[in-house]
Image (cartoon, rainbow, N blue to C red):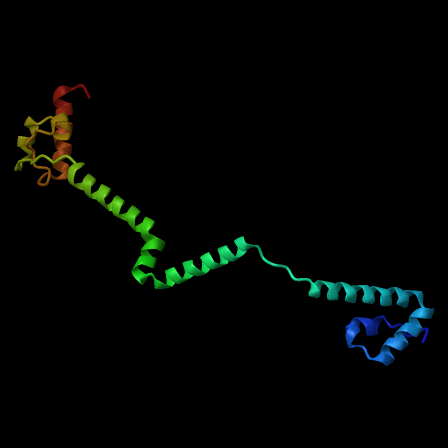
Length: 168
């Protein structure tokens, strides 16, 4: 039995589940083998520690009971809460922010832009010569029809004023 150590037997079974024959074989082998004696003593100590731990009862604090009961009541209240209220609780801040943004953008669209001046239609490019480039581009009170002007008419007006002044 010198070559056959008992450590495998101790590791595979719990000490309380061993038969009397196994215990006597382990004790006789442990008397001759120092390595197995250490393993046998360690298993005895571990068994005693486990028995002591199982016998010990730990009472939770009263505060723990209060917290658990409060959490249970909160879950019951949430279950009783209507679905729409739970949805608003989850997404209320985002929806409120979106409503505020829509109101701000609507106000800017209605009150923020200045009205565009109405411009009278100009039929011939020769009548554009009476207009200067600055008046066409920058004057808000001008009566030039922006919708009826073509690109060539605008360019002709700009270059005609450059030719007349000679300063450009």
